[in-house]
Length: 137
Image (cartoon, rainbow, N blue to C red; front, side, top):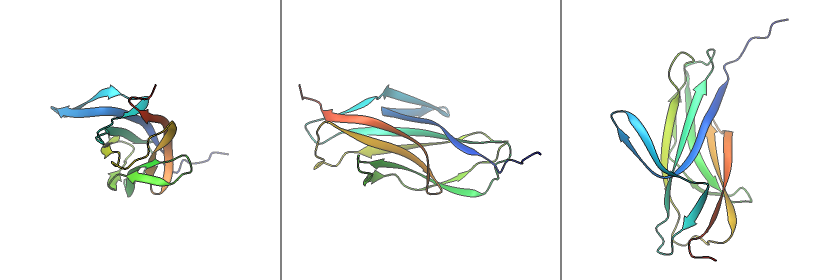
């Protein structure tokens, strides 16, 4: 018996970086992060790059994508704007870059933040990143 695909969509990249730039339609990420070092001056910024891809059966209907930053208990601390995403299986992948600034009153300690790529209210990919004070020993 042959089962038909309903159009699988995946998040094939979820990357944190210090910053990024775009030149001639090419995106370059600078300083890929595996941890976030919070600065003492309240200015801790980073970007999250995501790439969504659909299989050849994915319909070109509108989907809603966003990036969430949550704490270890799952409470949303920050979220990106919501983006309209159209994934036709014959088209190129869709990429989103969202910039985040930690709030000045963010309590920095040895903790994890979860970064989630969400499409139509479903988490397709997530990663954990350790955050700590830049000057902790």
